[in-house]
Amino acid sequence: MDLKNYFDYNATTPVDTRVIEAMQPFFFENFHNPSSFYSKAGEALHAIDIAREQAAKLLNAQPEEIFFTSGGTESDNLAIQGVASMYKEKGNHIITSAIEHPAVLKTCQFLAKKKGFEVTYLPVDEKGYVSTKELKESIKDTTILVTIMHANNEIGTLQPLKELVEIAHSRGVYFHTDAVQSTGKIPVDVKNLGVDMLSFSSHKIYGPKGMGVLYLKKGVKIDPLLFGGGHEHGLRAGTENVTGIVGIGKAAEIALAEMADEEKKLRPLRDRLKKGILETIPDVLVNGDPENGLYNTLNVSIRHIEGESILAMLDADGFALSSGSACSSKSLDPSHVLLAIGLKHEDAHGSLRISLGKYNSEDAVNNLLETLPTVVQRLRSMSPFWTNK
Image (cartoon, rainbow, N blue to C red; front, top):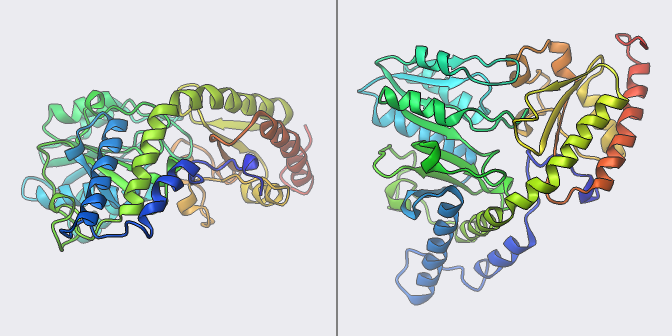
């Protein structure tokens, strides 16, 4: 597959060649355990310190507030379960939203089913926004955590995070956000947002898979999930993945330097796709709020046909797209995000998520706009639910 025809950047990204170059020495030349005492081990430890500074700068955080994990899923679990364990004597109520990533939803479900926690799942409106009023009304004396994502991975909706954080803090409640889809695409300033915890993942910002970050505001205490050595200031035991840490650090550095240019390039391409699809394909729904959401994300429901059938035919033509979250794309169930914003099951089944990245071009967008209407026409001609209007 030609990389220019890859339109699934919200699922994962190719590793930037500059990131690969930065990681290379730590596979063999400097493979040493940073906890050892000889000089080469000290070089590995120094490399971790540099990466921690790079990740901190991306978030406008302090290096000591950055904890390296195995990915966004672990970061989410560490934040949510860490708070639940540390503050269970204070309360057992957690608030989240109905459109969270499974890493958050399933963690909350586990705590409710196995640990006796009460979880409130806030609804969203037709564009995917959480109501500040509903959050305010949902907080109880027993609430210890609010966890609401920054940008939705399927429809790109950006929550009014700063307002939501202020509401939680006014009641003395901690706030965690899954910022896996926003970090590296738009400015994410933890001081401005006011969050207590934030998760992001390396492989969404052209870094290696298997690496993530949990930002933990100075002074916030949570229990660890893993026990062993005193790695990551005692919060995340296990010998450090120096190679991966160097990779996520370099990816963070590049993202900070280039995100403005990437938006300047990708927003017009996304808007061109939206306009072209609406002009050439009848009976299409645009999901979310593209004008105010992530500039690289477009989610549409092409009615009266299955999204999976569209993907299969596009794949045969050399295009890679998604019908929802990559973590649940093999499920036959419709997207919980699209159902939460009020779509009918049949419309949710006909959804496409197009997410762009740095290797897309105007030519590739034009090629997709030439191919997609033909694919839709062929599939609709075979559909008993479609009548040519």
